[in-house]
Length: 412
Ligand SMILES: Nc1ncnc2c1ncn2[C@@H]1O[C@H](COP(=O)(O)OP(=O)(O)OP(=O)(O)O)[C@@H](O)[C@H]1O
Ligand SMILES: [Mg+2]
Image (cartoon, rainbow, N blue to C red; front, top):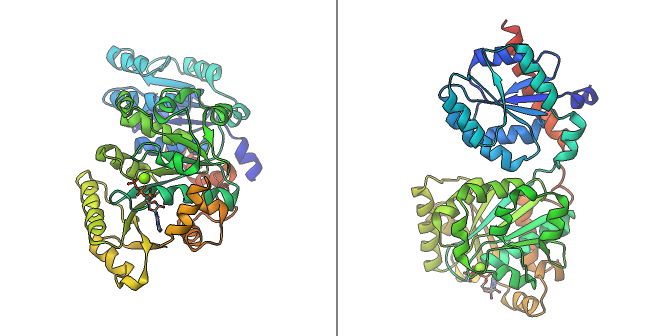
């Protein structure tokens, strides 16, 4: 059964209009299963990664045109080889213009002959085998590491998390060194990368396995590294949505992206990344100052409507003898989940001075064990990171995918 399901050709569309679904469904009988996803932008992109359609229809009729225009730009960037077809009425030339500008070159006229639609789809649709080859099937996670204030240990945690994830699961791991001071993480890992974040955004459409392997710098332990540009002003050349599109795109190549945001001063940008991440940690220490700063940081995020119940506070340099326990700190900051990392100044400094990452060097060090435990709690244990293959996800989503087209036909 599973075998046959995987061979199915899918067509995905974003319309809310039943008449459009109906019309398309009829025109496409026999060409594949038509699935509609009319939820959020993210849900649509997620659906593309999940079902891997051979073609995507975007509804440019009436008020939907604007939304579809933005979605098209996003999809073109993330899935450059995926054929996009605008569905609409030639009597709405403005909508068609929006489609063209967004990079959609093919149209289906809803008032035209269904046979024309069939022909367009037959011409453009990617065969199943090619869809699978074109896009890697990985869909990795993103962990964002924030620092409550300078010097609390955000970079140290990010570097060790990345190394631990790589070691445990032989996973593909990317460390995004977006913290300030610029390129601290690279320094701790003893790498001087050329290719940077802004360049990566500019080259988004060129990303494939080869490009990822050759353009990005790698640490000795195999963790890839992407730093900020040396001149921070370059960040102004890219938009938030482009930066987010890059993170989304990189999920296809890395089981885990660890983003060091410690010291990053652009809170709006930080908020967007926090929103996109699967896990978020705020590093603080046992000092009153750091605790207050952590609370303030959460307030700033809240002002931008970012409230995550799953946000974790990580109390670094934790020393039980100081008599301030972690639960109290969490309470004060207003988070539910709290972890501690032990005070290991000497071991960390010695490792840095030798140009190695502690997690690679001394897997049994108490700091590294605490980082491992943290990873476990996020759901990444040895051998697990790459587990969610296409098949597993298909299995999960298939019932829905089937229901959409079938339900429609049943309603005839
Ligand atoms: N758990 C710890 N125990 C002892 N020392 C630590 C611990 N974590 C980090 N340090 C040390 O604290 C210093 C600052 O750490 P790190 O650079 O990771 O902090 P940061 O939050 O990234 O700082 P910045 O604001 O400069 O980016 C480093 O010398 C590091 O070795
Ligand atoms: Mg730092």
